[in-house]
Image (cartoon, rainbow, N blue to C red; front, side, top):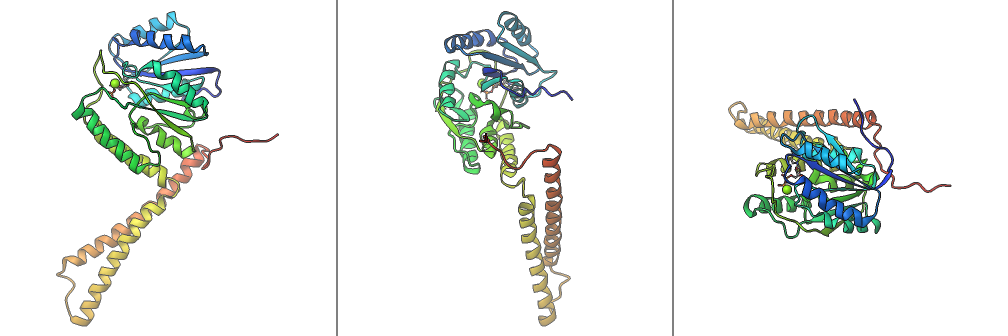
Length: 323
Ligand code: UDP
Ligand code: MG
């Protein structure tokens, strides 16, 4: 399998944009980005990842690429989703600083210089906060507010807005995070595992003027499932037996307790065991408990394979000082 991962930074800045059917936004967006890049005077690239668009998006992107040497276009074979498109952009990125943003013009490229300043202050990850978000209230803003509270409560990273795509990273941070499912909103939480300094800054958010949103309300449920995955990976992935084992122990101890109690009653008060539903419950609890413990042991084996197969260490070093 081909690996597209760039190993060393060669430029100052990479801007990564997942693009799916945004033919009416591309040109105006690139215009805005160009204005900002010309002010910044950095060695920059703009990576558009075409996520299997079936409108005129790809041909417009190719035209941009021909007229602007800073543009990189990656064409997906099919629609793999926004997270996959971001991951591809992160792999390809060559800049010391990597900025991700939406390609639908809802994020404002004019905010980019402030992200760069924050990174230069010493942060590893800067996340945008759409404090005045321009989306529908009932279907977008309310569910997203609930999701934000929930994510903030369950993960160690406290942000106001997890869903904002406009984010800035240092090169070594984007190269070290692996994204699956629809995990892009958990990047700060995932990155927190490697120990990053995170800042959040307010950004401008604009209503969509062209094209349609690619998501509906069903995303909320997927976000919650992803949250469970992230929480589990962050808290227990290196010690799964402690998670499954404690459920298993609780269940089998309870089951055994009930069994003893019934045996006691049968022996001393003559109450028969066989016509009591409690007997079934006790057997069920004991079996479920054993299953959980065995499952935890298997998971322990798998985490070892996981770390060793990828030669993925269980620590992360920011810098080594030596002469
Ligand atoms: N996007 C993508 N692949 C998809 C869905 C969306 O690359 O399968 C891109 C889309 O083109 C846009 C960004 O991800 O640049 C955010 O999508 P959208 O604006 O639909 O999400 P919303 O802002 O409504 O949450
Ligand atoms: Mg949008």
